[in-house]
Length: 252
Length: 298
Ligand SMILES: Nc1ncnc2c1ncn2[C@@H]1O[C@H](COP(=O)(O)OP(=O)(O)OP(=O)(O)O)[C@@H](O)[C@H]1O
Ligand SMILES: [Mg+2]
Image 1 (cartoon, rainbow over the protein chains, first blue to last red):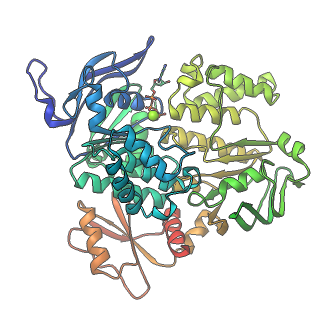
Image 2: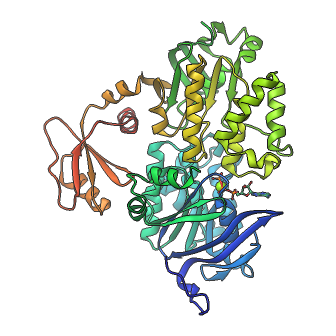
Image 3: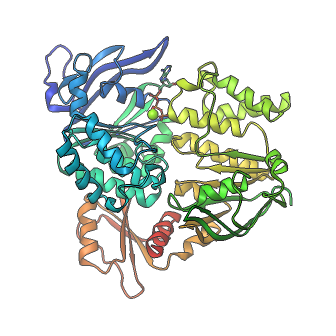
């Protein structure tokens, strides 16, 4: 990780995500503690951690959805305190709880998100064809989202989060509950995005997926307790797998 | 047969979609059986039918020797069920939710105290006893829901993807609890998308497109994988994979974390390719079987 010395100005613009002592408190409880991150453009960054460690809270701050309590950060070069609207225009976000409207058809979901991102009708129509076609879902365009297998829903949700062609995409447990084959398909998409130069910031509780990231951080009780490439972390903690590294750091 | 499950030629449709297509499965008292398969395979429909929430279209479904069509109240009284989307009371605290479910199930105070301790140890939620359930993280909510389900000891437990969103440490502890309940004689049917959890079951049923394609002990199930399997590691897995797929007779090349699993028919063998750091023949895992069954059944 690259840290700028604290007394010198640093160029945060080159990093897709840069934070310095980012913190969030809810009442007297500190959910995110002095988090320092420098995520390179085009990197697949795995944001791992125990349940309740503060991952979703940190992501919401980075996506301009929640103001920090203290600290600083930029995403795509925009300030998390002052430029949340700019951030939203330049990132895609798939939330942990909710991605698509179950009561809408697949096509309607794409149209809805196109509208949210302020695309014009013509672009939305083109993107809708393109996206459904690329996922092999054209024949199912009129089906209710509720009736689709989860793996398809998650890939479509990813497509919706990319409609406005953001440079950075935040994925909060995109493969939760997804079967092994569908997870592999989803990660193929993630790798394609990274190959196109997009930055992928992703959380997961599947430790095999941690291996598919360029670097990962592991969070515990609001703090980042480890950061590095999967290989270097396995090496550093003398463990055969990321699952064992995770358990060593988090089982306290 | 206290707590046993018996499914005979069971089918269930929604409109013109055949969700479960003539399946049979018998689970002994005190057995822990895992249900795996892709989304939409019919796992949840099967589980909801066992819980008397759906009525079979055809076939016989028995829990504890009783027919789910005619013994709704009796079955519900002896069964514990955790649906995929469990509703907690978001404006009650963690402790209040647990107490509510303990009272609902009529758990005696001494047993409740003991059980709470075990569950708090698994969930790590004790420091958050007084937090509203609505303010918990996704995985903490899931763990609270699980704890509410396990606060009493039913004879039969049906758990639909209980560990989705749960971190690896808590997953391990949760499975210790499950196996302990199994040892105490509880019959458990659990679905999971984590293949390493399937490995912890006494038997595993693989479901696909409404049918059960295989059911066996994990150690036996892996024998369904008919090919020779090699594990290949190297620093550039993508190139290795492309090479193995394009230039060798590999039947399949799958990424498994930091390695590749490559399969070959009896006539071929893998010669270590350039760029491979290690190559060894290995026993297949449940995940290999899962991917194989999915690809050959499609
Ligand atoms: N609005 C809120 N009020 C009080 N506490 C909150 C609030 N939102 C989140 N928290 C707390 O902040 C902590 C971090 O939650 P967060 O959702 O960021 O965790 P997470 O790392 O995403 O966990 P998971 O892996 O379970 O999704 C938790 O203890 C949670 O209960
Ligand atoms: Mg979260």
